[in-house]
Amino acid sequence: MQFLPPSCVGRILRFAPVSFLLLFSASTPCAAAETIWHIKAVHPEGRLLDVKALDADGRVYDVKAIEVDGNRHIMDIKAIKNGERLPVKVIVSDEKYAPVKAIAPDGTILDIKALTSKGEKLDVKGVARNGSIIHIKVVNTDGKLYGVKALSPTGQLHDVKGVKMLANEIEAKVAGVSVAAHVKALPQVETRE
Image (cartoon, rainbow, N blue to C red; front, side, top):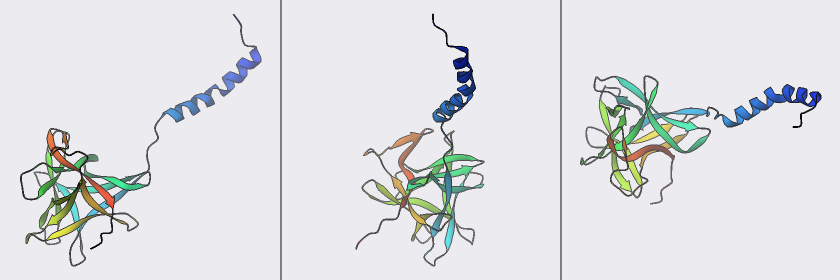
């Protein structure tokens, strides 16, 4: 059996803590930098309406888009209830317009609504589909549709859309709830008419 000379052992022990820290930090995931975007509906008169999640008791919670590490190409939309991030999804339904809801871990559904200055709570729905994209709009009491946008702290706008990954009607089940599409914030796309 061969032993290291004492001078080598001293050097190894001197650098062991540094080596351990480098190895540990390389294998430990770092917290990702996040930027929180606001979710708003755009009224035809130019006003912005807050989009919020409401529970069965009428309590109101924020709905936000979350940019992670500068990735603005596809951002998750979450309802923030008591610090917990709840997924926002287009729910499977037979209604004319597909409901957009937040889903708690126990399967409880929270409504997603646009709130007017007059206290009205307007539905947020999936109103049309083009391929794998579901267009999400606010439906006012007259049936008119308002766009739903993600607004960054620096004033950038993204569209809020439902995204389907599968051809099936049921995209996934979240806490036992059948989901038709995932709700995401996407860069605005120029359309030509």
